Length: 183
Image (tube, rainbow, N blue to C red; front, side):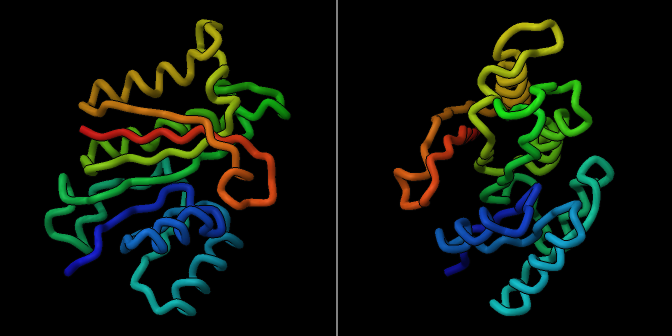
């Protein structure tokens, strides 16, 4: 029996990748910009002897169609596209510049990849501040509504929930928004 497949965006040091693998997925690719995080990801791949390919680079310059190398029919066949884009633009502890921050529009890169790959499920993790981040017109929550709207435009219905890490055994009181979207 083959394991379900996944692609990790904004992989960081691989925390979400670990959870997704423990859930039974084969993470085909991990994409990350930070060189030290990529070193950590590559070390984990080597240590665990999995076949994940780590791609180091800016998400905005990566063509999602390049992923057809590991699976001839990846479009519509990929089980999960997941990631947690940079949170600083939406963090309540920061400046809250949202989409005006250079990192803010990276949130929409998940949609660009989804439009190209048409995964069966999309999973996004983000700080709770995303829910109240102001859109370009100043509307409170505008960024989150825009994100859900562009997912809907490419045929995905989204459900979301705020979860507290402490409720899942993590020794932190961090709240995160999780969005699950399916066609």
